[in-house]
Length: 395
Ligand SMILES: NC(=O)c1ccc[n+]([C@@H]2O[C@H](COP(=O)([O-])OP(=O)(O)OC[C@H]3O[C@@H](n4cnc5c(N)ncnc54)[C@H](OP(=O)(O)O)[C@@H]3O)[C@@H](O)[C@H]2O)c1
Image 1: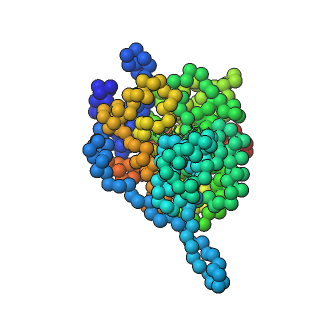
Image 2: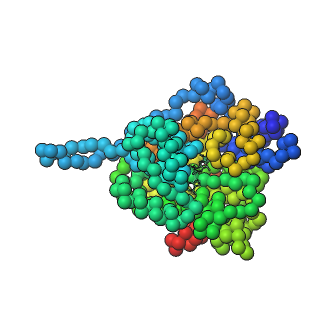
Image 3: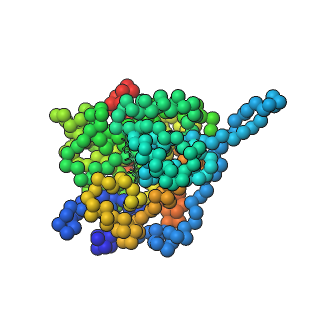
């Protein structure tokens, strides 16, 4: 594996800006098919020693808003309320670490929007997130009905919505055949894109009503969908084509389960879904930022090699991938650090710019990264929006 990483070094040096690599490469090791995620840059920031000495991630600054309450004597008195952030897929990995970081700031109440209620409760408890800082609500993004029910449940809770984080995802790199959501969409795109698309569209009204100083809608992206990076060029590459497969429903019944109308490929379906996430964020920005003041943003938090995202991979991959990222490519970022990065995008006033895809550089400082040609194609984003709203029953 070292030679693979080393062979990437020269091409890496010509890759601008994007500092981490989390691409998927189908290769063979000891006769077994093994997908390896490689890092494009030998980034000294992620060497073991330096990771220990990294400056703390910029503090999540006060994200409270004054509410006017009537005091006993009738005088108006200002109190501060916590922000409310919905995080999808907060039962593990990045979502859980972000919930923890926001809770630790003392300024947020997190709605953990999860498909497995008990798992989410246990996860919150295991990290010591105080009960008063979170609520678990059921959400299965692989069912449009569940998304609608979640929105109803959330509204009935009476809480305002200040930030939505579309974080949950599934990834099936070794699947030979597609599987489908309750509504018949290929599962990766159905969950990662269409479920979140409906959720964000429905909750837009709630975000609009927020009186919080900074209201945000964050959709987690990935370097693997960006073909302007070395990672994004590792086959199979993301490519939505002309959306012909999506337009006919991705149902695999006499039609393709892939967005571009091609043969099923689980790794590509995931990368395609991430391109959809990044395009959706930008289309939201174009349509709604000016009118609503809501910040729409995406991010690549780094390669979090130990999360459940890789659970469908072969055991050998899951064993080798974290040390490979830590010691060979130095592309590893812990769940804790990644969670703090996403928490920054949720709450740091300095990251309030809309339409941005955030990444972190060698000093663990955030910067506005460039998206690939396809992931920043405004015409494709518009078309994706229109096709997606038909599929989820909004048009
Ligand atoms: N890991 C990385 O290196 C990396 C790099 C770049 C970007 N990302 C992105 O980071 C995000 C989080 O991934 P992760 O690495 O933290 O993986 P993870 O630990 O597997 O977390 C994924 C979460 O999504 C949830 N989920 C899956 N299907 C769902 C559904 N139908 N309805 C509701 N929730 C569902 C999972 O719930 P269960 O607990 O019930 O399974 C889990 O909580 C994803 O958007 C991923 O694309 C990850």
